[in-house]
Length: 242
Image (cartoon, rainbow, N blue to C red; front, top):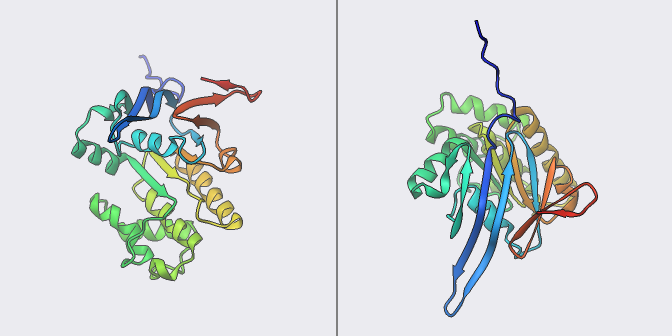
C-alpha cells in the first residue's frame, strides 16, 4: 500500500508570486511608473524584507502583494489565488481569511480597549470564543495587565504590540508589515521586531516586511532592495541579483 508523501516547503508552491509586476499612475499631463517589471517569489514560512528609501515603490509593492490594489500589468498570486484577477469584494474576503497587517501608524480603533481591538477581527470572522483568543495573544505580547486600556492610554510600543496581537489573532498565512518600527524609539523598536520574528517562527506565518531600516531587514531570512520601482536580491557577496 502506497503511503502519501507529506509535501515539503520546497515542493509546495510559493506563498507569494509576482510576475512582471508593473504599476503606473496617471497624472494630469503625464504617467508615473512606480513599479516596473517586478518578479518575486516568497516561500511558505519565510521572513522577507523589502528595503528601500521613501518613494522607491516599496509600500506600493506591499499593497499589490496584499491585494489592497491591482497592478497595471502583471499578476500576483497569494496562497494559490491569483488575486490580481479577483474583484474588490473577493480580494477583501481573501485578506480577511488569510492575511494580517501591521502598519507604522498602528491603526487601532481609539474607542475600543486593547482587548476589544484584538477581538474585533475574530468576531467579524465568526471565530469561536474571541475573548479567550484575544486574551491569550495579549498575554503573549506582554500586555496581560493592559487589556482594558484604550490606545491613548498606551505608549507607542504598547499600541504596536496590540496591533501585532490583532494581526496574528486570526492565524493568517501571511503577515504584511509596513515600517512596523518606524514610529518607535530604538529600544522599543527592537522589542517589537523581536516579537514579530518570534511569532513568525512559532506560528509558521510568512512574514513580508517593508522598511528603510537595514538592521531590521537583516533579521529576515531574505532581503530585497527596491530602487526607482525595480527590485533586486543581493547575493552573499552583496552583488545585486535580479
